[in-house]
Image 1 (tube, rainbow, N blue to C red):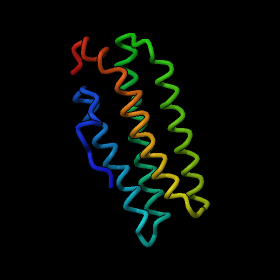
Image 2: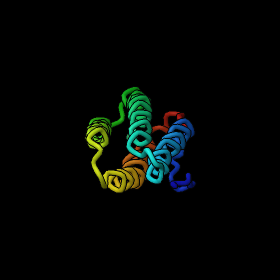
Image 3: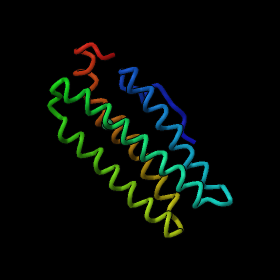
Length: 133
Ligand SMILES: [Fe+2]
């Protein structure tokens, strides 16, 4: 289980709230690992995660566009990559492949470290300077 920690914060409350919810859904994937009908559970969690990711990314990107954030394009690319990878996982779940859960957990943890604590934190200064705190 992944627990929210203050070090994950990007110092923008609305985005932090979205990330907290995102982690909640990530945990559904982690928990599904031990369930009996795991492929079905993971498939549900993945669908929920994809839907939420879409709306969360849109929200971040709307702020960036609005503020003329200089790293908008690169950031958007990372979001696109995430969705592409997620679609790949959906396909693997549908094919009832084994070993998918460990790969998926690794991918999500990597996202938490590299994107949320890396790429996302780069917009903090720009957002804060423009009154989005
Ligand atoms: Fe992002």
